[in-house]
Amino acid sequence: MYNRLSCLLPYNRLALVAYPKAENIRDRQAGKPVVQEMKKWLRRTAIAFGTLVLLVAGFLSYSYFIEPRQFVVVEETIAAPNWDLRLDGFRVVAIADLHTGSNYAPPERIRYVVEQANAQDADIIVLLGDYVSEAKWDQQCVRRATNRENCTELKVPVEEIAESLKGLNAKYGVFAIIGNHDWYHNEQKIHRMFEEIVGLTVLNNEIAEIDVSGTKVRLWGIEDLYLNRRVPSEAFNSLADKSNVIAMTHNPDSLLSAPAGFAIMFSGHTHGGQLNWPIFGPKAVFNDPRFMDGHVEVDGKHVYVTSGVGTSVIPFRFRVPPEIAVVTLRSK
Ligand SMILES: [Zn+2]
Image 1 (cartoon, rainbow, N blue to C red):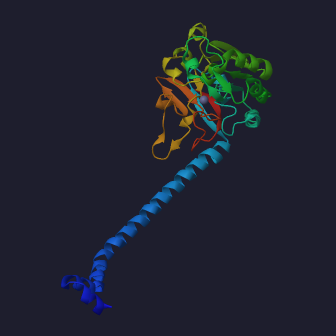
Image 2: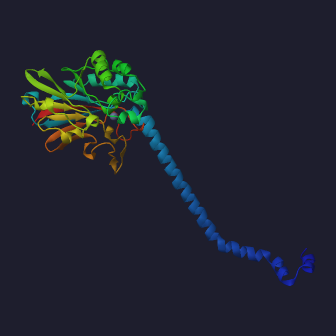
Protein backbone atom coordinates (compact mmCIF):
# COMPACT_ATOMS: atom_id res chain seq x y z
CA MET A 1 0.00 0.00 0.00
CA TYR A 2 2.74 2.50 0.97
CA ASN A 3 4.77 1.44 -1.98
CA ARG A 4 1.98 2.23 -4.35
CA LEU A 5 1.26 5.60 -2.77
CA SER A 6 4.90 6.53 -2.82
CA CYS A 7 4.77 6.26 -6.57
CA LEU A 8 1.85 8.63 -6.85
CA LEU A 9 2.61 11.32 -4.23
CA PRO A 10 5.37 13.95 -4.12
CA TYR A 11 8.00 13.57 -1.39
CA ASN A 12 6.68 16.00 1.18
CA ARG A 13 3.14 14.53 1.00
CA LEU A 14 4.62 11.11 1.21
CA ALA A 15 6.26 12.01 4.51
CA LEU A 16 2.89 12.89 5.97
CA VAL A 17 1.39 9.66 4.80
CA ALA A 18 4.38 7.67 5.95
CA TYR A 19 4.28 8.93 9.65
CA PRO A 20 0.67 9.60 10.53
CA LYS A 21 0.59 7.52 13.72
CA ALA A 22 3.52 9.29 15.40
CA GLU A 23 1.94 12.75 14.80
CA ASN A 24 -1.52 11.70 16.17
CA ILE A 25 -0.06 10.20 19.31
CA ARG A 26 1.82 13.42 20.09
CA ASP A 27 -1.41 15.45 19.57
CA ARG A 28 -3.40 13.20 21.82
CA GLN A 29 -0.76 13.26 24.52
CA ALA A 30 -0.71 17.06 24.47
CA GLY A 31 -4.56 17.28 24.48
CA LYS A 32 -5.23 14.65 27.11
CA PRO A 33 -5.09 16.87 30.19
CA VAL A 34 -7.36 19.43 28.43
CA VAL A 35 -9.95 16.78 27.58
CA GLN A 36 -9.84 15.43 31.15
CA GLU A 37 -10.30 18.95 32.56
CA MET A 38 -13.26 19.50 30.24
CA LYS A 39 -14.84 16.24 31.36
CA LYS A 40 -14.30 17.13 35.01
CA TRP A 41 -15.83 20.60 34.47
CA LEU A 42 -18.82 19.12 32.65
CA ARG A 43 -19.37 16.58 35.43
CA ARG A 44 -19.19 19.28 38.11
CA THR A 45 -21.56 21.55 36.17
CA ALA A 46 -24.01 18.67 35.70
CA ILE A 47 -23.87 17.85 39.43
CA ALA A 48 -24.35 21.53 40.40
CA PHE A 49 -27.22 21.96 37.94
CA GLY A 50 -28.84 18.69 39.04
CA THR A 51 -28.55 19.71 42.71
CA LEU A 52 -30.10 23.10 41.93
CA VAL A 53 -32.98 21.48 40.01
CA LEU A 54 -33.56 19.05 42.90
CA LEU A 55 -33.47 21.87 45.45
CA VAL A 56 -35.93 24.02 43.49
CA ALA A 57 -38.23 21.02 42.85
CA GLY A 58 -38.01 20.07 46.55
CA PHE A 59 -38.74 23.63 47.65
CA LEU A 60 -41.72 23.98 45.30
CA SER A 61 -43.17 20.58 46.23
CA TYR A 62 -42.73 21.15 49.97
CA SER A 63 -44.14 24.67 49.98
CA TYR A 64 -47.06 23.77 47.70
CA PHE A 65 -48.06 20.24 48.79
CA ILE A 66 -46.80 19.85 52.35
CA GLU A 67 -46.59 23.03 54.41
CA PRO A 68 -49.98 24.55 53.45
CA ARG A 69 -51.54 21.31 54.85
CA GLN A 70 -49.90 21.73 58.22
CA PHE A 71 -51.59 23.55 61.06
CA VAL A 72 -50.20 25.02 64.26
CA VAL A 73 -51.69 26.70 67.30
CA VAL A 74 -49.30 29.45 68.36
CA GLU A 75 -49.43 30.50 72.01
CA GLU A 76 -48.20 33.84 73.28
CA THR A 77 -48.49 35.81 76.51
CA ILE A 78 -48.38 39.60 76.29
CA ALA A 79 -48.28 42.17 79.09
CA ALA A 80 -50.56 44.87 77.72
CA PRO A 81 -50.75 48.50 78.87
CA ASN A 82 -54.06 49.90 80.08
CA TRP A 83 -55.30 46.38 80.80
CA ASP A 84 -57.06 45.79 84.11
CA LEU A 85 -55.52 43.44 86.66
CA ARG A 86 -58.95 41.81 87.00
CA LEU A 87 -58.62 40.76 83.33
CA ASP A 88 -55.23 39.14 83.85
CA GLY A 89 -55.19 35.87 81.90
CA PHE A 90 -57.86 36.91 79.36
CA ARG A 91 -57.51 34.60 76.35
CA VAL A 92 -57.97 35.77 72.76
CA VAL A 93 -57.96 33.41 69.77
CA ALA A 94 -56.90 35.27 66.63
CA ILE A 95 -57.73 33.90 63.18
CA ALA A 96 -56.73 35.71 60.00
CA ASP A 97 -56.54 35.31 56.24
CA LEU A 98 -58.62 32.18 55.76
CA HIS A 99 -58.62 32.87 51.99
CA THR A 100 -61.19 30.13 51.57
CA GLY A 101 -60.57 28.17 48.38
CA SER A 102 -56.85 28.97 48.19
CA ASN A 103 -54.28 26.16 48.21
CA TYR A 104 -55.40 23.61 50.80
CA ALA A 105 -57.95 25.99 52.35
CA PRO A 106 -61.26 24.51 51.14
CA PRO A 107 -64.41 24.81 53.28
CA GLU A 108 -63.47 21.54 55.11
CA ARG A 109 -60.28 23.23 56.24
CA ILE A 110 -62.29 26.18 57.57
CA ARG A 111 -64.46 23.76 59.57
CA TYR A 112 -61.27 22.23 60.99
CA VAL A 113 -60.04 25.71 61.98
CA VAL A 114 -63.39 26.31 63.72
CA GLU A 115 -62.98 23.06 65.71
CA GLN A 116 -59.42 23.98 66.70
CA ALA A 117 -60.38 27.52 67.72
CA ASN A 118 -63.33 26.29 69.80
CA ALA A 119 -61.03 23.81 71.55
CA GLN A 120 -58.85 26.62 72.95
CA ASP A 121 -61.35 27.64 75.62
CA ALA A 122 -60.99 31.30 74.62
CA ASP A 123 -62.71 34.29 76.18
CA ILE A 124 -63.17 35.83 72.74
CA ILE A 125 -62.34 34.89 69.15
CA VAL A 126 -61.34 37.60 66.71
CA LEU A 127 -61.55 37.14 62.94
CA LEU A 128 -59.14 39.48 61.22
CA GLY A 129 -60.29 39.64 57.61
CA ASP A 130 -59.55 38.19 54.17
CA TYR A 131 -62.07 35.38 54.26
CA VAL A 132 -62.27 35.06 50.48
CA SER A 133 -60.02 33.91 47.64
CA GLU A 134 -60.33 35.15 44.07
CA ALA A 135 -60.76 33.03 40.97
CA LYS A 136 -60.61 36.20 38.85
CA TRP A 137 -60.34 39.86 39.60
CA ASP A 138 -60.54 43.16 37.87
CA GLN A 139 -57.70 45.47 38.94
CA GLN A 140 -59.27 48.51 37.30
CA CYS A 141 -62.45 47.94 39.28
CA VAL A 142 -60.52 47.53 42.56
CA ARG A 143 -58.68 50.81 41.95
CA ARG A 144 -61.89 52.77 41.30
CA ALA A 145 -62.90 55.11 44.12
CA THR A 146 -66.59 54.21 43.83
CA ASN A 147 -68.73 51.27 42.64
CA ARG A 148 -66.02 48.77 43.36
CA GLU A 149 -68.23 46.03 44.71
CA ASN A 150 -67.93 42.62 43.09
CA CYS A 151 -64.61 43.45 41.44
CA THR A 152 -63.74 39.80 42.03
CA GLU A 153 -65.09 36.35 41.32
CA LEU A 154 -64.61 34.00 44.23
CA LYS A 155 -63.41 30.41 44.39
CA VAL A 156 -65.87 29.75 47.22
CA PRO A 157 -69.01 31.92 47.55
CA VAL A 158 -69.53 34.02 50.68
CA GLU A 159 -72.58 31.97 51.73
CA GLU A 160 -70.47 28.78 51.80
CA ILE A 161 -67.67 30.49 53.76
CA ALA A 162 -70.21 31.67 56.33
CA GLU A 163 -71.69 28.14 56.52
CA SER A 164 -68.19 26.74 57.16
CA LEU A 165 -67.65 29.21 60.01
CA LYS A 166 -70.92 28.25 61.69
CA GLY A 167 -70.44 27.01 65.24
CA LEU A 168 -67.42 29.23 65.98
CA ASN A 169 -67.88 29.99 69.63
CA ALA A 170 -66.16 31.65 72.60
CA LYS A 171 -67.21 32.58 76.13
CA TYR A 172 -67.77 36.30 75.46
CA GLY A 173 -68.36 36.19 71.72
CA VAL A 174 -66.83 36.17 68.26
CA PHE A 175 -65.90 39.48 66.60
CA ALA A 176 -64.84 40.14 63.02
CA ILE A 177 -63.50 42.92 60.84
CA ILE A 178 -63.22 43.20 57.04
CA GLY A 179 -59.99 42.70 55.07
CA ASN A 180 -58.93 44.17 51.73
CA HIS A 181 -59.82 41.06 49.70
CA ASP A 182 -63.26 41.13 51.33
CA TRP A 183 -64.17 44.66 50.28
CA TYR A 184 -62.73 44.04 46.79
CA HIS A 185 -65.57 41.53 46.59
CA ASN A 186 -68.48 42.86 48.62
CA GLU A 187 -68.10 44.19 52.16
CA GLN A 188 -71.82 44.59 52.84
CA LYS A 189 -72.61 41.05 51.77
CA ILE A 190 -69.87 39.53 53.94
CA HIS A 191 -70.94 41.69 56.87
CA ARG A 192 -74.57 40.59 56.50
CA MET A 193 -73.86 36.88 55.87
CA PHE A 194 -71.47 36.63 58.80
CA GLU A 195 -73.97 38.17 61.19
CA GLU A 196 -76.94 36.19 59.85
CA ILE A 197 -75.34 32.80 59.23
CA VAL A 198 -72.39 32.64 61.69
CA GLY A 199 -74.02 34.82 64.33
CA LEU A 200 -70.89 36.83 65.07
CA THR A 201 -70.45 40.61 65.37
CA VAL A 202 -68.78 42.51 62.52
CA LEU A 203 -67.27 45.80 63.67
CA ASN A 204 -66.72 48.59 61.18
CA ASN A 205 -65.23 51.65 62.91
CA GLU A 206 -67.32 50.88 65.95
CA ILE A 207 -66.91 49.51 69.43
CA ALA A 208 -68.59 46.56 71.11
CA GLU A 209 -68.52 46.35 74.87
CA ILE A 210 -68.51 43.07 76.79
CA ASP A 211 -68.86 42.52 80.49
CA VAL A 212 -66.28 40.18 82.01
CA SER A 213 -67.31 39.54 85.61
CA GLY A 214 -68.15 43.21 86.12
CA THR A 215 -65.17 44.61 84.16
CA LYS A 216 -65.76 46.14 80.73
CA VAL A 217 -63.71 45.01 77.72
CA ARG A 218 -64.08 47.07 74.55
CA LEU A 219 -63.59 45.64 71.06
CA TRP A 220 -62.74 48.33 68.54
CA GLY A 221 -63.07 47.19 64.92
CA ILE A 222 -61.25 49.43 62.42
CA GLU A 223 -61.75 49.51 58.63
CA ASP A 224 -59.01 48.13 56.37
CA LEU A 225 -56.17 50.59 55.82
CA TYR A 226 -56.25 50.18 52.02
CA LEU A 227 -59.88 51.32 51.86
CA ASN A 228 -59.27 55.01 52.53
CA ARG A 229 -55.64 55.02 53.74
CA ARG A 230 -56.65 56.16 57.20
CA VAL A 231 -57.54 54.91 60.67
CA PRO A 232 -60.89 56.45 61.63
CA SER A 233 -60.59 57.09 65.35
CA GLU A 234 -63.91 58.76 66.20
CA ALA A 235 -65.28 55.69 67.98
CA PHE A 236 -62.16 55.32 70.13
CA ASN A 237 -61.88 59.04 70.85
CA SER A 238 -65.49 59.17 72.00
CA LEU A 239 -64.89 56.57 74.72
CA ALA A 240 -65.11 58.09 78.17
CA ASP A 241 -63.09 55.22 79.61
CA LYS A 242 -60.29 54.08 77.30
CA SER A 243 -59.13 51.17 79.45
CA ASN A 244 -59.28 47.52 78.32
CA VAL A 245 -59.60 48.29 74.62
CA ILE A 246 -58.69 45.58 72.10
CA ALA A 247 -58.32 47.06 68.61
CA MET A 248 -58.86 44.84 65.59
CA THR A 249 -57.89 45.70 62.04
CA HIS A 250 -56.71 43.72 59.04
CA ASN A 251 -53.52 45.58 58.21
CA PRO A 252 -50.96 46.01 61.03
CA ASP A 253 -49.55 49.16 59.38
CA SER A 254 -52.65 50.83 60.89
CA LEU A 255 -50.81 50.77 64.21
CA LEU A 256 -48.62 53.67 63.06
CA SER A 257 -51.62 56.02 62.51
CA ALA A 258 -53.80 54.76 65.36
CA PRO A 259 -54.10 56.93 68.48
CA ALA A 260 -52.33 55.58 71.57
CA GLY A 261 -54.22 54.31 74.59
CA PHE A 262 -55.64 50.92 73.56
CA ALA A 263 -54.25 47.81 75.21
CA ILE A 264 -53.38 45.84 72.09
CA MET A 265 -54.21 45.63 68.38
CA PHE A 266 -54.78 42.33 66.55
CA SER A 267 -53.99 42.08 62.83
CA GLY A 268 -53.30 39.70 59.98
CA HIS A 269 -52.70 40.55 56.31
CA THR A 270 -48.96 39.82 56.12
CA HIS A 271 -49.19 35.99 56.04
CA GLY A 272 -45.78 36.19 57.74
CA GLY A 273 -44.41 36.82 54.25
CA GLN A 274 -45.61 33.30 53.23
CA LEU A 275 -41.98 32.46 52.43
CA ASN A 276 -39.55 32.67 55.32
CA TRP A 277 -36.10 32.27 53.78
CA PRO A 278 -33.28 30.82 55.87
CA ILE A 279 -30.76 33.56 56.79
CA PHE A 280 -32.67 36.34 54.95
CA GLY A 281 -36.04 35.82 56.66
CA PRO A 282 -39.39 36.81 55.13
CA LYS A 283 -39.65 39.60 52.57
CA ALA A 284 -42.17 42.33 53.36
CA VAL A 285 -43.90 43.16 50.09
CA PHE A 286 -47.19 44.61 51.25
CA ASN A 287 -46.44 45.98 54.71
CA ASP A 288 -43.98 47.61 57.08
CA PRO A 289 -41.25 44.95 57.63
CA ARG A 290 -41.56 45.36 61.41
CA PHE A 291 -45.01 43.80 61.34
CA MET A 292 -44.34 40.44 59.69
CA ASP A 293 -45.48 38.17 62.47
CA GLY A 294 -46.07 38.01 66.21
CA HIS A 295 -45.91 40.68 68.90
CA VAL A 296 -44.43 44.10 68.08
CA GLU A 297 -44.37 47.31 70.10
CA VAL A 298 -43.92 50.70 68.44
CA ASP A 299 -44.07 53.94 70.43
CA GLY A 300 -45.76 52.19 73.33
CA LYS A 301 -48.47 50.75 71.05
CA HIS A 302 -48.73 46.97 70.85
CA VAL A 303 -49.80 44.85 67.90
CA TYR A 304 -50.07 41.11 67.53
CA VAL A 305 -49.89 39.87 63.93
CA THR A 306 -50.99 36.34 63.09
CA SER A 307 -49.69 34.85 59.86
CA GLY A 308 -53.06 33.32 59.04
CA VAL A 309 -54.41 30.18 57.46
CA GLY A 310 -54.58 30.43 53.64
CA THR A 311 -52.46 31.86 50.85
CA SER A 312 -52.83 34.63 48.31
CA VAL A 313 -50.88 35.86 45.27
CA ILE A 314 -48.72 32.68 45.30
CA PRO A 315 -50.01 29.30 46.53
CA PHE A 316 -46.93 28.56 48.66
CA ARG A 317 -46.01 28.61 52.34
CA PHE A 318 -42.43 28.00 53.44
CA ARG A 319 -41.52 27.99 57.12
CA VAL A 320 -44.73 29.91 57.90
CA PRO A 321 -47.27 27.11 58.44
CA PRO A 322 -50.99 27.92 58.64
CA GLU A 323 -51.85 28.95 62.17
CA ILE A 324 -54.25 30.34 64.66
CA ALA A 325 -52.90 32.25 67.65
CA VAL A 326 -53.93 32.03 71.28
CA VAL A 327 -52.86 35.20 73.07
CA THR A 328 -53.09 35.45 76.85
CA LEU A 329 -53.21 39.06 78.06
CA ARG A 330 -51.51 40.02 81.28
CA SER A 331 -51.86 43.30 83.12
CA LYS A 332 -48.73 45.46 82.95
ZN1 LIG B 1 -54.59 37.93 53.25
